[in-house]
Image (cartoon, rainbow, N blue to C red; front, side):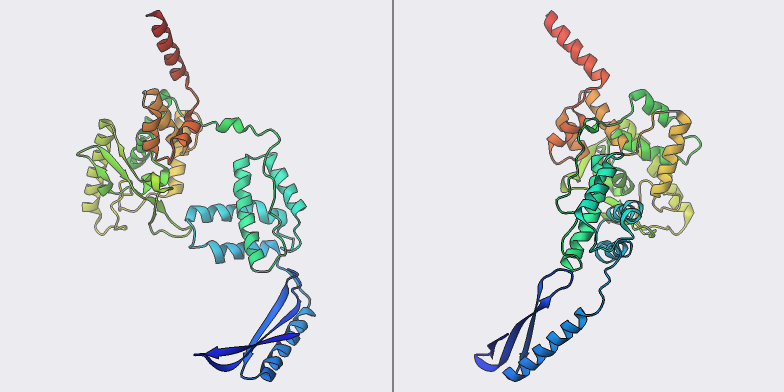
Length: 382
């Protein structure tokens, strides 16, 4: 049945609009509404009947849903590339090709069930941290949500999935860091590396920036007169791009001025002097940005090279195996051992809420534990 209504323009009747309910969509099961316009009801009726005929004709064609191995890369390219931070894009790419396609690639997207997906999540939880599994699920859930919006699936199989271990321990979010002797041991191991990497890791340990924040530092971000580093951006770059792309720090609270001690200040002054000499002798610079941590031609350091140098020096010096991000934890713990307040550490790290800082660093190092007991003992003895 077709329902008609008059169409007006400037209060003048100029035609008709007709609406009819078509057959159900073969995938979503939703009724397909057809609307057409024309000068007369007869013309509108003819248009609607032809549209319904076309829909019926398409329903008789065999429907072959996309395979997940084809859909996920297509989703990544269409909906994420250039629209999210490169680090987020890389995370989605890794999750798709390392976990999701090997598990579900052969399945059509409209055939994946919630039970199948929950079973996959349960299996991941036996060998991986809940946080890691949550990141994998975020990729799949995001992609399936888009498939639902595109009417390619009836239900999102990721909806309602439970991501929780029976015994949710995860070492109480235990962090890893170096003790003071490990820091000295590590920093003494750069004699066979380019000097810039020594300065880079020294800054991570002595000032606590995130890796991307340190890579983005430019000479104008250093205030040697007052001994401050201005952290106001992070370095982004696409997988295949050599171009330096800047983005905002992790959160708006991550923009901060970090006070540095005289030793780090003097070391960075030495580095800037070297950079200026290199610019004079190198000729045209590869990069227009005056990076603090750069190659001799002024171009940015590469993340992979930074990681390789870090791994080599760790092995050479025999220090405990921690990640580059753990150097940020190391800085925070050293600040707390030096009796800085939790509020001061929060501001240096750029955390939004002091509770975030407290939750991460609420543990007590052996040195802090001993000092606390000694303070109590002295107090009780008075």
